[in-house]
Image (cartoon, helix red, strand yellow):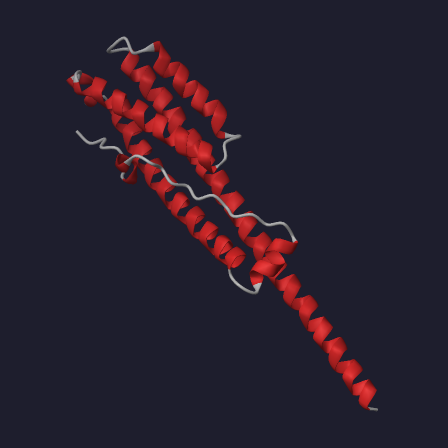
Length: 186
């Protein structure tokens, strides 16, 4: 009888450990999938922003001869966003901000351009996308923090190491001017 009770306790303990393992395993993949989805949303917003920069370039071209390399740079960035990881997005973010800064400098020299309704609409849309990118980046970094904390704390780190999980990279746009949307008001 005593052996039966011990056997039952061991079976319940084994079942409990299996459910615990499954629960942590599922938590890892929930967070991993959420980070991938959020990264996808960031990529979509960055592509939209680059499309709008391209449209702004078209508007600016009619007022000033703009550098050919700028247009080529925007086209190259748009093509690379889809396959970019968090580190690559940091570089694309910095480069696209640089292009926006040059566009704004050109527009400052052409007052008629600043009053164009098309330019105003595009710039308003870009500001909205800047806010959207910031929200998604915040969400991505929060998910990464939760995932990385699970990976570094006991007992979930045991499961994480068993299934080969690695830390998620944070999105950290380096330039201090990147913490705020570019000034687009006139």
